[in-house]
Length: 164
Image (cartoon, rainbow, N blue to C red; front, side, top):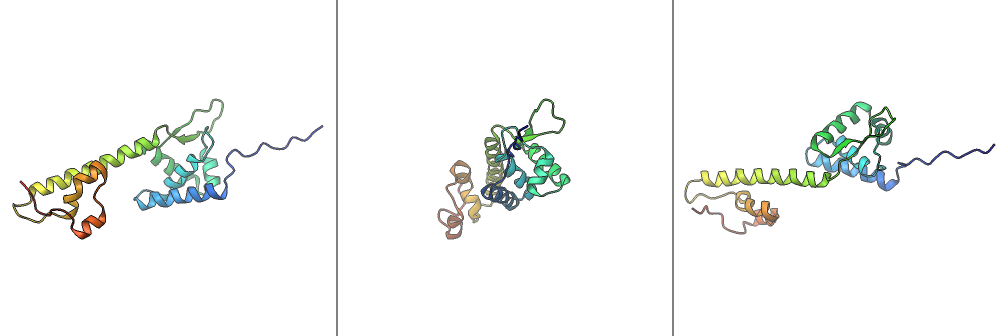
């Protein structure tokens, strides 16, 4: 009788993957989203194609099942994660949704467009000759190509007078 060694863990985290998961969490937190959702997204990005169960996520991220549940729900609502079918398995599996980056980029573009529209409305509300805020001045180019940057705002590059 021969002893067969156990199959290697398909999601054995490396130091690099653990660092990546933490960085994803910090990035999410920086932009106002839950850190746990970023950590879960990071874990799903480095996970096997079949995805991970909430129990596997909780173990790998050393987080509570409740925390994982909330993070997965958040990512699912954002369109970044989805349930991964796995016939014969009772536990749900989750994976990064195909085209997740396109979804995230589109959401960001919609937010930029909303800010642009607000700035344009603000410019129209100014009385003739009033000074426009630098963010309003740069808003159109931000939406079309992110051409204006904070240094532009600080130095006052470009016209600050309302035209029209």
